[in-house]
Image (cartoon, rainbow, N blue to C red; front, side, top):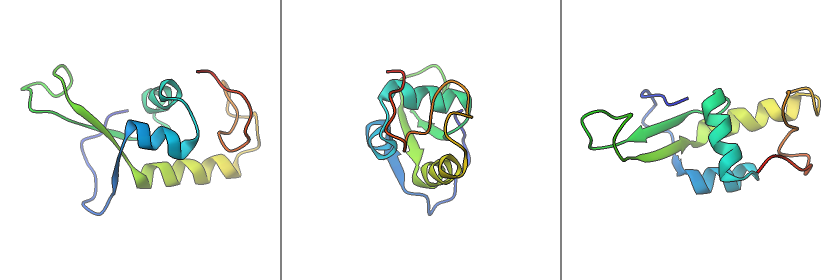
Length: 92
């Protein structure tokens, strides 16, 4: 989910940095963003922010919240994948 609002104190990470921090592939991170598990922000100079080229950033606060929720959720109960902290195989 792309969100336009954020606090000015949030550290913004690239998609590559965010995927590495979660220990997942870029494809999995993109799925997490689409599903609303992780919040991403798209910055662009195009008139329509959702159609033009742009830069996607993920807030560190969003990753922290996701990781906290993943640790509290029993493994395997989240549906299509397991916790990224478990070291189990996931979709790539």
